[in-house]
Image (cartoon, rainbow, N blue to C red):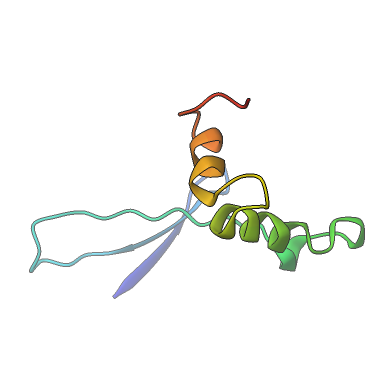
Length: 75
């Protein structure tokens, strides 16, 4: 059974206890994306998603991920 807890700072936690496993898993989800975009930014989330997963004409998706994660210089 899932349990929703809201902390004093507004952070919401969704937890589920699984007594048959000996590990833990975490996921982070934020209220961002096209649903939350203003008209001026309409489509920006989808554009960024495609750049990150598909790359651009001059940079591969792997290169973009490396730069975003700070594992490569931006040059």
